[in-house]
Length: 186
Image (cartoon, rainbow, N blue to C red; front, side):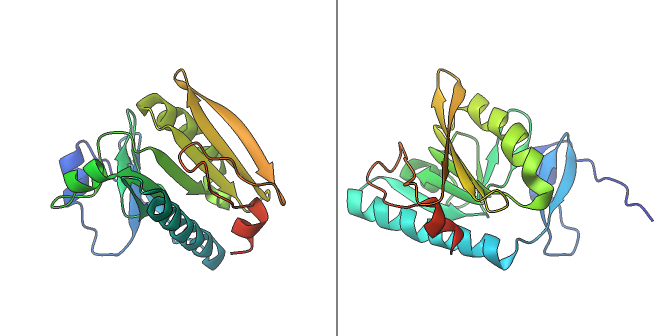
């Protein structure tokens, strides 16, 4: 038996949608797309990065906050739920008493690739995040053992691929000392 796709026409419909479950969704082409729970590895990578980002923010005194996958981003085409959002203090204040949906581009987003998200993370989200002005987008790929850091340059991303013991270079966190291997061994 196939399920009929659930069409969502407005952001308000999405915010008020309740199917009686704890399932997480993104909106893609005005249809709800279920985001299955990540694997233990997926969640361990997210946790490691959240902690490392938090420590960098504290060390450098940056007006930023790392958020796990409950904060959503409205792109020009879709409503996305990245694995990690690094948001400004101003953005945090704007969603403090409302749904955690950002209508402005956060400085940094991270997606951890899973089998069902490869095309979405590498292609769709890359163009969507660039279009709204996300300065830095990380694609952490445990399937290919690499991290791709996309840096915004005149409306498009320049992509830098890191693997093994290579230290990741971040524009948002220039003092970060973290290798791909450290991330993937989380």
